Length: 316
Image (tube, rainbow, N blue to C red; front, side, top):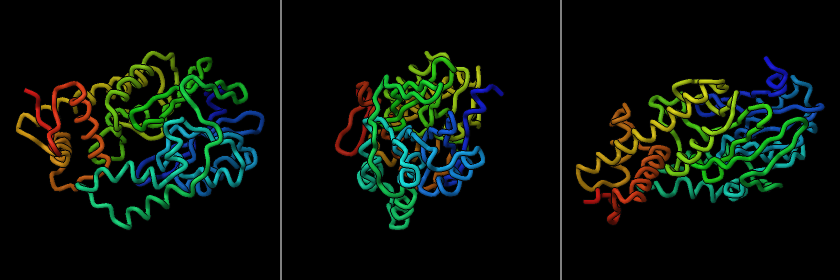
């Protein structure tokens, strides 16, 4: 293991069945965290792991959120409270980090016609996302975060969320992508499906990252088919290629389904789930609905389909 790898900590925690990772960089007994997990992760997993490396809470100086989702920013308040760490995030996700009601509304309300949002589900969501806290430094494409001998360049990598970022150290040839590159989807899913909300942005992200000189890539979950969170060499190219190919496959599935006549979002999502190997009796969920809508929007932007009221049809 290289000296650089010894100075990078990988902190595991479980999140609704998924292996999830927060990364920590160490320099002169100080720590920079990449993501904070959900609300329970800092106390149960992050702090115990850091203490094993001799890092106490007051040594946590920086926290970078790769994006606003609850398993990546839910621990922000706790980390800020115990350490006073400077919190950073991309400008397009800041509003979701600072306003949890807005994040919930934006991410779930559009699908309430096809998915029942129960009180229990909403309660669990707000438990995981924790209390709100302000972002101290707003990041944008090309910004640099210096920490010890790390020079982390901020790369805007949207698709999974509008303000998703990756962190690239060109000298060390390391890249932290978090959820920006999905492969076939998170490995813990019965039927892995990638999670992104904008196809064009996601493909641009994959192209952008493909051009970087990277020896080691760090993800926040295990993504099929590699099913690991630290990738090296050819594995990186494989994950990027798989990610691109699954987008093309889903585009074709959605487009061909509309040959059967006008379809609404729920019908498209259900068909996509079945074609990918799912059981037709499985209830729809926001992630699947969001993916289906992303591809419908993409095909509509290309002029291949059109929306008529609440249904999409193929252009003649």
